Image (cartoon, rainbow, N blue to C red; front, side):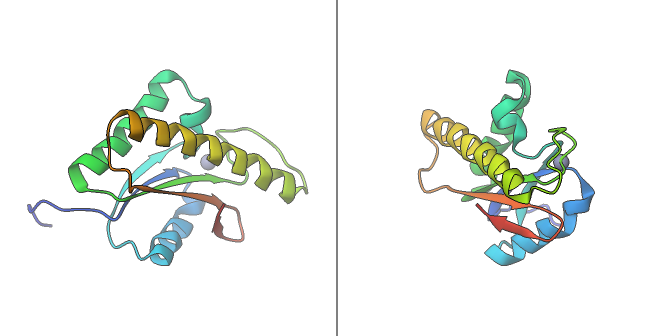
Length: 140
Ligand SMILES: [Zn+2]
């Protein structure tokens, strides 16, 4: 432990579902992120799109803090298969499930982009949209 100020490579909005913990590590390794600010919430990026105003603002404030305090240059937004927060069933239809969550991630990205612009935050922040299932995780 060190009391020194630190910077992070990314802020990671990830579902608190621990079945996907190892994939978070994989995503960090894939992008070469050494240090991240994690934001674990039910549904991952879900509440940026379909949450209450309170929960959307909570996530946006966490992203804002990571950029302001720790100079995060990447924002990872995640959704995953079989997420209890969505309560959706896609029985034997992986294609429909991926399409649904890709749509959610695209809308979440728009929300974050508008927020960054409105708050005059760095325009070079990269938004990475990740979908995870029980085989792995990939950028959408
Ligand atoms: Zn989940």
